[in-house]
Length: 177
Image (tube, rainbow, N blue to C red):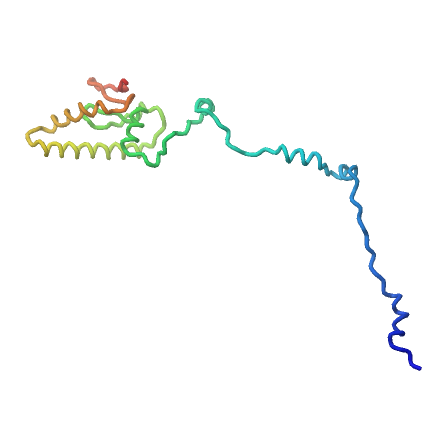
């Protein structure tokens, strides 16, 4: 009689066995600390970590640190007149006796871009000369020096407080407020 085929495989069944399963136990707290794991300390440090954020400083504190306080005005939209007023107060430019702006950079109280200041002076003086020519065309009988003096008398009242201006003797002084 013939034995079924599966009976031939029965002796081989003992050769197959499941792999060993190893369960690794977690280390004890003492072993973790000895290995360099400090969960309590790590959690305490994580809770107390430094979060970068701006520190509010007053303008006086900034000045004491040698930092110029930021302006409250957005300088990107300044007109030539605004820039000239700022330079007049800082004594970098001055209102001359002839009605034109003059370069007074040696007396300037802060560092400025010389080329930019020169271009500003040229633009404003060119605009003033054009204005005087137009004013003269409106009054053909008036002379240019007379128109300049009349314009300058009115303009002097609108010069920014503390703006650098030329005195009659040629020296410079801030406009009194």
